[in-house]
Length: 483
Ligand code: C2O
Ligand code: CU
Image 1: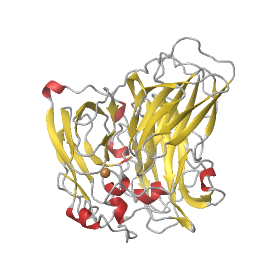
Image 2 (image 1 turned 90 degrees about the vertical axis):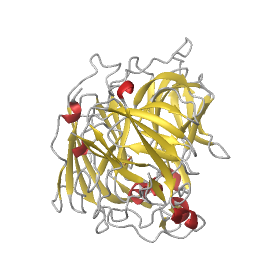
Image 3 (image 1 turned 180 degrees about the vertical axis):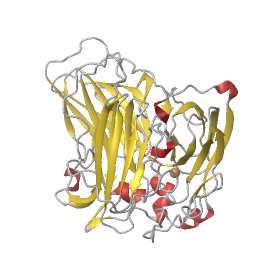
């Protein structure tokens, strides 16, 4: 599978050009039943994204409208569906109302060429207001992915600017239904959104929202067929909050982590930091009964969604989830791997400001705060990083296997994300985790974790904490793959 380098042209961007196109759904409604006979298709999907301010209300807002920033007038969180092998051609236009508020699209978790990776100043020019940009690639993997801007992310994501990207073709046995659940908070004030970044939050566990939601609803009740096997694609799209997911009233298995198939294992509890995804297969209860997916990380467990069962009852046998098709991620060659250590730490300024709770003063051109609370290997991403890019955190040779030895020497949790690759989990000093692949791993305080991957694509790949306030206050860098 060398799709990754099939389209080597850079994302084509232009400033000031007029390109306005209404959002179109990825495909017409109606999915063919059953698993594909051949898992590789090869269609072309055209997607238009129009980043703009759209004041609107969501059920979790009460009746009040808030000035959301979204990609689509049709849907505050568009879902783009492709089949494995489909080519996605995206045109994005920046119609955000604020002068200088530039954007770019990062395709989180997709192993695509660096030119399509969507990081301003690193892999493309920022898309200025009035400008547009085209992305063109074939996602090489099936799974549950998403996309978001990579600039002033704390505010842009805080206001809603994201979408989900689902690549189908991994099912070996069709489920009886599918739910897509996107969990996030909103920071609602009396007169609009509250500040998205606070010193107190950035220096600690982040600034939480005031209202929680799944698909814009605080605790939705969703109809499902009774005694059926329903696939649930569960996304944590919050910039901050960590979830601890369990299920009550039904059996469930984890069938994918960050989009990649795992040998199905029973869901007891699974922690998900910002940007992390799991796919579940849930055996729904009998007609008239309910099951709930729950976040147990909070003192008062919060219901992510209630599944309300009705109808005939489709499955009689014991719950026996079929594995998804194996991932196409290249297998690391551990015998010949090079290990590189990374330490995630707080800076001195973080401790002195940890007690402060003032509004964050300003975000610079690269959309990063001018304070650094966090570092990777003692290096903090500089506030004016677009003027003086820091050196890479590591330089890797294309084609070789690397083990990243990730060490959290701080008191906070950090969901650590690496662009463009999927890591194979090796081991952890703090958590007993099953074999899985991930693009974002949640390091608990004092944890040391090893992950491995093949550096099969050249480029400068961002490597950062996905707790966005940590990312924007220093915990970001990049790794260069040469060749
Ligand atoms: Cu979703 Cu650089 O991240
Ligand atoms: Cu962090």
